[in-house]
Amino acid sequence: MADLTVPDDTLRSEYDDTTLKDGGRGKYAEQYAAGTNIVRLAPDVTAAFPSEEAVNETLRSVLKK
Image (tube, rainbow, N blue to C red; front, side, top):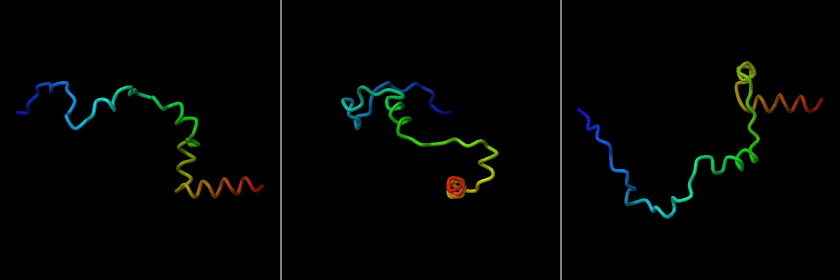
């Protein structure tokens, strides 16, 4: 049977705890969101385009009109 004991809550010796301070979830979320250009497509639109290139080609043809 597997050992189900809770391990000690200590940092492994190969990690430097001085470099791990001030960490936090979502620390750079605002910067990331400001610098991205990701667009989420609806499932029916995604199904109509087999690749990123197909989406770009179609959008470029619309922009030319």
